[in-house]
Length: 587
DNA sequence: GCCGTTTTCGGCCCGACTGTTTTCAGTCG
Image 1: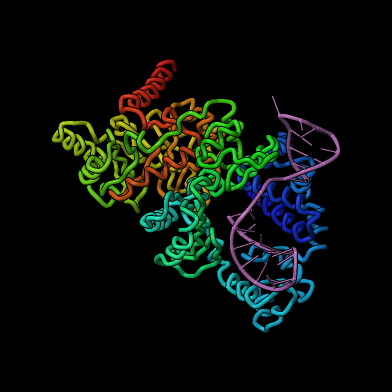
Image 2: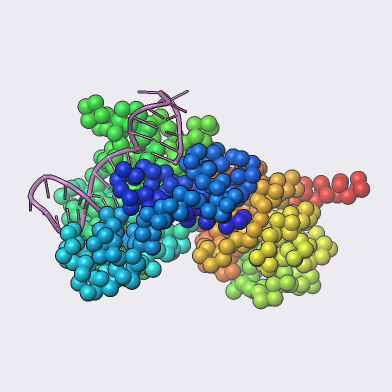
């Protein structure tokens, strides 16, 4: 994918800021650009492709005017309107609006009165005492500005879901010990299981009289750095761990569902619901759904009753992104999303046969002790991955023998034989067919050549009769490495046609496929496998992260191979081999 | 600027907290 999506998203984000700066009469225009920016940022298809097919108008949030600007950019490399705005607005200071506590009004005043254009100039002005005393800039506001400026770089970073979950679990545990807490739940993007997290949101219900006690306890929990805001029902703190903001909201039991819905978001999901409510003659807020005519409370205690009142099926948090969940729930029953209890085995793990920390026996013992799986597949690296101590054909044969011995001793067939074989630069595999043929399961992955387009490479691997799955298909590492360039539409077609599964790799830094590609793959009819890629016993718990992705992509058990019995997986493997045999015989 | 099972015009979610100001604007989620 070209970087055009990101560039345009950036331009529209800037234009939105510029319109916000220009004044309240432009706020809806600003909203429109803001939405267009978000949409482009989340788009999984190259905008150049959509432009070629003349389908820009079909993208939700992109209308005639913005489509025209995208056209203009693609043709000329510039957007006239943007250039005009840049002359009108001191755009160097737009970044100031990203600082917590700074809105368009404050930034405008700072620019007009003190000619401030950059963060550094702002810092200087604050230190020289020129800001304080300006109308609207009291002592405390200036102090907050100083603090925000210091925090900006750290605060911008989002953290991995798994880290956010460990923080929220700890806080939830502490708060649930308070006997006045009736209900408690983590909300926001953690509840929606987004792959990265900004702030942590926690909702509590209690009697109104107990709120102050709960707030006091919350502020006193371990690791609090500072209190950012504190009211009777809402508190924000900063904690040392990852320098995160944690928001606590306390409501009555009757408001629980409405508040949970509101606080879970996403923003877009909420806006849709509230707009729909309004059309139906209701008003919806975090306290419930009310009839506008007489203000009567119609729903609020549970999320389920609110969705019901709105004439909608219950939408699980993972799907609430304000995209197509409303349309899709209308079209069909929301089928039951896959859960962690559906998983029957882990199909990608490493032992000390390559770069794992434990022996295959220890790994197997651990899984059987703590998980209810029916099978695991040993998939150590192959020889090309030297740094991981990958196996050659001889070593792999030895491992196969070893697994057979272990299984025989245990009197079962729990450990399946497999490999994570390397896909070489030309798309061939780095182990010969003779050894691959003997394995129960072959996962093929790319571990080199990340900068090239890897479409053909992956397609060739899919065509191989013994390859059953493509491991971590995009190769991305969240926050560290972009995925390599791949034409996913083509890959999904080939994967489906050849009977090759794609992996949802549940390593926290990988989460690969991600939710969006996973959804596209599922729509294309591709089978998926959720794997932990465990390199130690502890990592088997990553399975739940993989489930999060699958759920966000609307997957049910029928989409996920390792929710099926081993017999079904065997059929999946054999049918691909058989097809190739037939094709070979026909030649 | 976008959008439409009331609409191609006229809407566009709604409330908490802060700080500064004495009744509310600004900002955030």
